[in-house]
Length: 330
Image 1 (cartoon, rainbow, N blue to C red):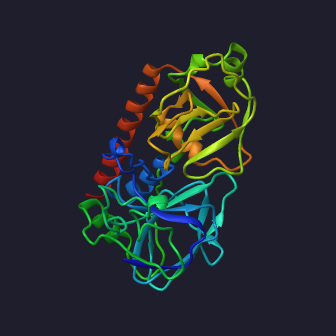
Image 2: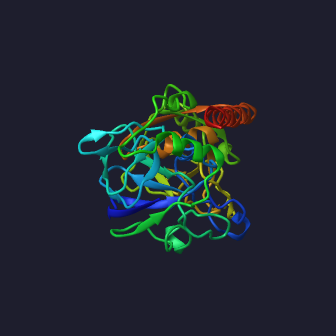
Image 3: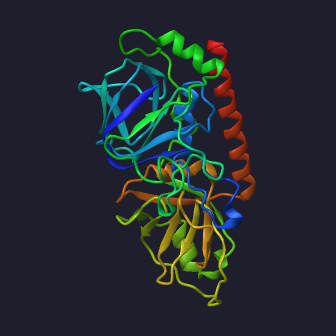
């Protein structure tokens, strides 16, 4: 299965779930910003959830199939379209060879993920196919996708993906009447981000701590895959100790020297010197990934224990979904 990029769009790259085993060597996690949508696209095809996907930022990309392909799109950044017709997301779609497709903007989100049966075939670098653009590693030549790039699938489909392929292939676009209930994996309020207090939470005065959980913050226009600057009430420190560089991870919320908040995302560094006021719970990071510049968010405090329960329930539900699709076809 092969596609060729005709127009790359804004910041389009190959990602998987990240580079897990090299954080101690200062290699960022990287990977899909919205790991939930990346997994949904793969699971819809019967793939391993960690298969390589194409991450699109908003719409504007155009690509053509050079062979028959089995694809799935997930995420709120764009709609997948053929000839002004929007195709459904979160389900497998058979597309015949020599078909041109494009992504149309979806105002409700920022990023979308295109999976192919078997996963996209790019080299593994440090245990991952994810693109980390600043260091030019992973993905396709360590860079964003550009016009005329060609991508193939890994031509070794597992039984579930093979069965889905056989059920849909033909001479025209085809997809089943079922879809993954993506919304059931997300909270109803997508602008309230659940967080846990971080190690330096008490370095700030009481009005600042109260404001953090009661005021609205706005995502800045200089946000990217490394992190978001959040505009809002500045934090005032009461502890002036110098913080030695210490561990940070996607979802860490730092406070800069001017009191501003920085929400770290997928390509963030592995250590940082700013105090950490909070940590986004892992199940809410996909909400952060779909934020657009100028979006309003609020923070809600939960305990570390409750965050762990949410994560374990999420993993349980995701596994049930994988098994349900596999059992449907195999």
